[in-house]
Length: 84
Image (tube, rainbow, N blue to C red; front, side, top):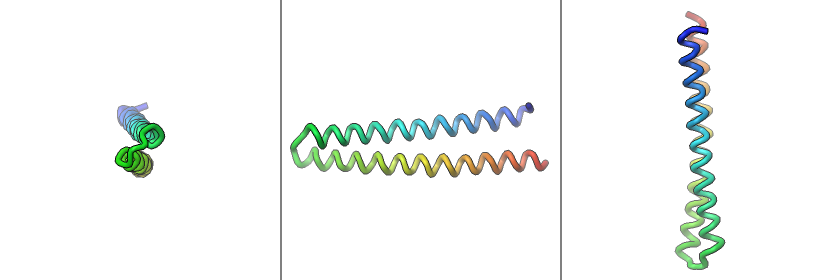
């Protein structure tokens, strides 16, 4: 295993950690939104809860798209290293 292989492995692991951070953040937004909708009957809290739910969905989609794009870039980088 060369130094470049270790660097690519660390990059892959960092990408996974970042994806898990996106998942954790989106779950927190979903939980906060659901809690606001369920426990607070005021209209403004209801709107805020739905906004948080939508934001959580956007964050999870954004995290998944970013993860896949970075995974492809890492794979391309690995292929270019092996061609040299």
